[in-house]
Length: 253
Ligand SMILES: [Zn+2]
Ligand SMILES: [Zn+2]
Image (cartoon, rainbow, N blue to C red):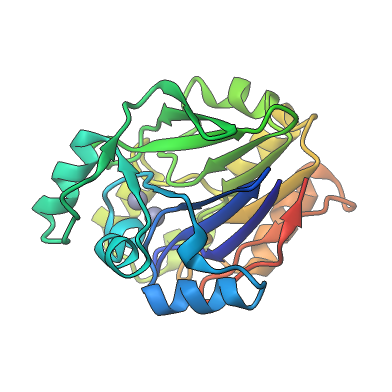
């Protein structure tokens, strides 16, 4: 299984995953041209992608959903409530969306895909686990909080893209309004560097690959992410960072 983050964070999210001849995208928060070019650098033709799966309705995950469908002919999958919420935001959605339900597992070609509800403040947000029969990879950003199913989910994974969104001190001292600060730290916002690191320390024993993403541009730095994770997990903790405005390195598990 190969995974590549094309962009990660509030400026746009898009993740590529391939396994056994199936090529998928998760979220469409960057422009079509940008996704196309970043995949091409790895010799991947976006027109060959078999499906685009949407985690939740927020614009940084859905802004280009119509472009991806129209220009690249990619079938789109999202829950009905997410689709309605995307439309309510004035984002164009193609007519022939395929639906799945949160908290279900379904087959897609050679893969099993599980959608697990998060507590993030979206209409019907989910994180995904993709299982190809030999490895399981989790796409776990915009979590809200460390919700009750999350530790067990981490225990079951071989690889994860985990959100490490904010440094509490930077957020506290930053320019965000009191309301925005409260939202981020609430059970409906994002999880912090320390929460992500603690989750990995307690439940990441089977992980062969950790990618940290959805790193806030305003309330975090890559240095703080690494520093906090290494304080909790040890100095030799290795991970891949998913950057804001460019693709990550490609990881293989
Ligand atoms: Zn987001
Ligand atoms: Zn979100």
